[in-house]
Length: 384
Image (cartoon, rainbow, N blue to C red; front, side, top):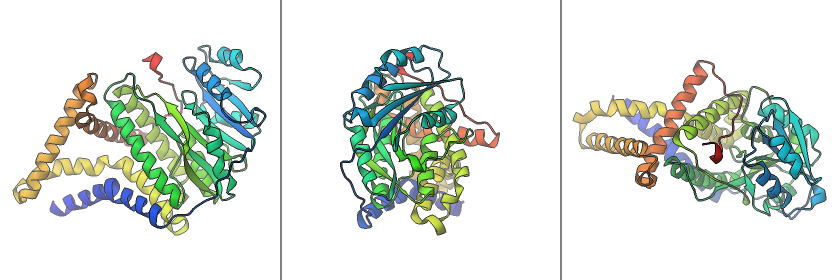
């Protein structure tokens, strides 16, 4: 039992502490600079929408106001079977610069394939309907493309101060703060593990039509860039703002959907996890996208095992007490999640940690039983 404890504890320590430190140190000690320049290539901004009437007008106005030459920026909204008035809103606000591609319900991958086919820009920018760009976001996003070795650029998703939602918003913000720091380090020394769907760009020449059975377009497009021998870098000045007002239930369901889609995507792109061919990026991808998302297994083993080690000394007793305190705080945070006190980090972070790992367990179970999450439904503040 002691050997099993230390094996699981070492695994947890590597994923949560050791690998992030290794990534940060690698970025500082072995940097790989790339060229930046103020260039203005032709850009196609693609927005996939399904029943986004609550936000699509604001998104169009935000896109039209971007600080980029209008004759070099085309805006394509692809409506995937919207029946809530989204199409009419797009047409009413087009101002001659926005193209609507209206489809029957085909799913996001096929919708984005249609949007790419309807566009012509050298650089393709992918965006969510509820992501509002800083005026200079496109300019910042295309600057790394001055380096021919750069094939894709991941933008910086920033959450606005929450106006609603429960305690899960605190954990979500902390998660993205850590993700942002790791993306900086990954980019400094190589390529990031994946972009966020809110804001990222790739060269048109590197776009590979998305598979219908892989719903995570941001991860798949990212990995396709790396698979073709190009770098995917992070640009912190390319900022997309989003509100985070989700409830715990919505957060849980989204995390399950993302993880199931992510595992499917990794299976398709599994060749990138061969360290003999892809070096540190393979280890990076395996750790961040597989091991991190299956941490519920060693954590569950530790939770069950440690009480049986109570008699093995003071250290194990302290571990048991620490586990009990942590899970009690998580339980309190979850029970009070709709109240302001639950947004205190002492309660919110343990609760969010358990929420994410519960979603991981559900995602693994969905994969085992063959359940896929191929359709996406927006969950905007006005709908909750």
